[in-house]
Length: 153
Image (tube, rainbow, N blue to C red; front, side, top):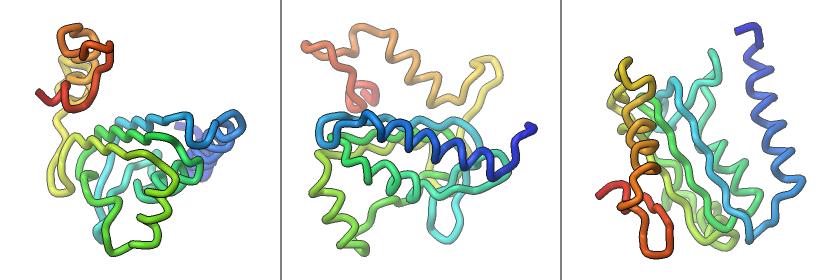
């Protein structure tokens, strides 16, 4: 609570810089997970770093610059399930495709909905279901991988 808005955003950017120090472009994959307040404004998905709205598109662009093999984003917040990549940004999309093997976005809800948070679960519903799936061995495939498509089933 004592940190300013600039401090929180600065800590996020510092984390990206630290990850970059040892990140192997094209080989390492990355998972970005956020649970908290979110929103949507002017067609952009947002997450709230304390009192500051930060576009998920900017997070995607920050992480894409690392050239991860696969990028996974889990956003457990209200109103944040809006488009991040669109065909209207062909040059950005081509650069992304050239530098990565895939991206997965999993939102708790669409940009016009409220994410479910139940106090007895001590998490948002999406987070709770993901944690529940991690513990459920029957969801893992024959190679021991747990994928979003298996969680969704």
